[in-house]
Length: 379
Image (cartoon, rainbow, N blue to C red):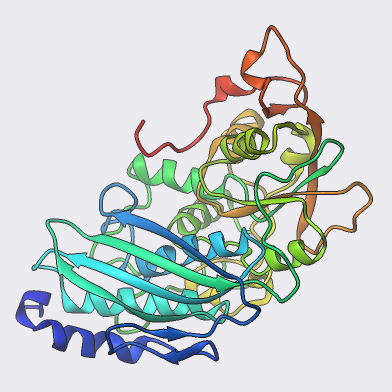
């Protein structure tokens, strides 16, 4: 019989977690006291919180503990990058059913730490509790570079270039496959195992090509399980003078609309530019050893959708790729990884499209609302 969290005290469980966690130069005092003590260089401190709930955001027959931990960290770290900030520390609340295996919990801690480590962040504390299902709350902290203000989603200006950095549509395709039953793991299947967090084996062992359509479909499923957000490019965008910046978590269409309404403008997206974009792994992953550890090739190739129309729908309405959407003054040299995908227009009253009067989004001149808008927690 495998050891469960009900077999150990809270202190014993924490003793299993702490060895997997890192520290960094921002941590004056880490886990173990009533509070952590963290340095905020530059004087500006940014904070964000996200939750993941079992069978709402993930399923344990889709994802290992390592993968759930990785995802929990990355979706929060992406929010820090979306302010143009640098991530520093995280605190994590983890509620588990008493029957949860201790090995799963340790695997979760490994994934959380591994993802945080990609951007120099460290887990400095949190809380444990019991619950009917797995419930994870992550609060992430970061700081602004001295002299660089945070970049808000409300700063887009008419005439700006709309640019995006990161993947588009891959996580949405992966989720669609998983919901249809494809990619479900049996207990004997390989995943990021508790004994060897460096598994699984690469989908394409040569690591230098995208592989078959079947390989790319598995890449899409893996990118849902373990997203690769371009966190560090947010600070680059801020230093390059981005007027507006945000994380694309609920879909390009929904989040571009949010930016447009917050800024009182219309983000006019270019369908051709979007069709050609969103298939390149963002930095720092392009040369990372973590690609093989997560079972991903160096190059993804084209999104393995059912058709060009399906690929466009996935890129516009598929969420959780956690790319970055930004606007820049015309003529600005875009930071590495950002690609121009549209322009910013004035929000002009239109009797046929009254919902655009306060700002919003269009695609090549058309209202794309018929495609759906992406993820909504309560719909």
